[in-house]
Image (cartoon, rainbow, N blue to C red; front, side):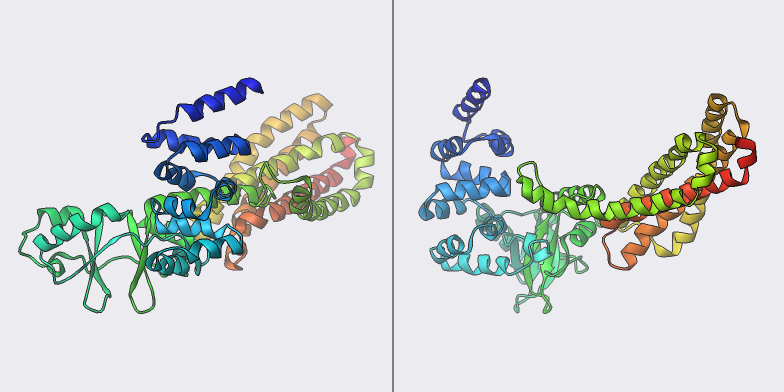
Length: 440
């Protein structure tokens, strides 16, 4: 432990405030630091460097660092940060501290921050930045270049210039490259791209990410109902959204809430996990009741109890493969409902082929172990049937849940487990009942 503390202390002492990579690495590692070490960092770094660390740090670390600083220094640090990042940090503070900080901000900053705080955290308005370049359509290219040079030091995004009319409504976009190579006497409206993609502030951040990915955009403007520009969502914000959403989906598929972390208290973890365990318990009882219905068959051939879990286990694994692929493609907007019939046929054929191959191998091994070819035949047929079932339900369940506006990542695994276990046991033990005279 002492060696680890020395390593962290050396890292703090060796930080170069001008080295952005070092600052980002430091921000990522701060969850391992004690409060006293965090206070030392606050004292050692200048405002600009600490701003970079704050932008990249986890939410809980941001709250801690802010708690160590007085309001005046926090405002000084905020002067080096984009408005959307400031709004994100303010949003996680208690109401009292947030009001204190907003109260002492400059009037212009205060208005922007209040507007950003008014949007849902997971919406386009919640992740947009207000630091972009917007110019009048009446400016010539020469005038625009001069104006851009003035604005660039104060803004975050410069690759795309947004062109406005006299009513401040967006008329089009121009890439900075196109401005630099255009005839300097042309007006911006003459070189502006009139057809452009935009989003509304209420749109869910995941939908925004899909749009940016689909059209390969560096940034997408956020417009209100009157087509006035509120801000832009940049590609780096979209990357953060994709990571966040994928992490959330993975946790949901495991029956874990996104709110739970390694630092969650024992009571918090119990509250977040226990409901899902109860739901899974219900599905386990359904499978148990199916097995109970065939108690007499199992009693006559004990080998059935040792082998039936092979069929359901393989069905569950195959179904999870299908569910994972479908959920990923649903999230990316690549599943077209008119193609469901084609996809279903493919999954059934896939289940048939994979089931036959896996079933043949398993059937031969089981037949040799128990010296009974009929048991091997039952395994072979049941494996084919259950892999077809798993493919069918692995495809249908997420699509139905999506249509019902239920998160497929949240519930698919529960329904899939129920289908593969209950139908798998029923199929295997039903076949065993037919061949019971050959098994005893």
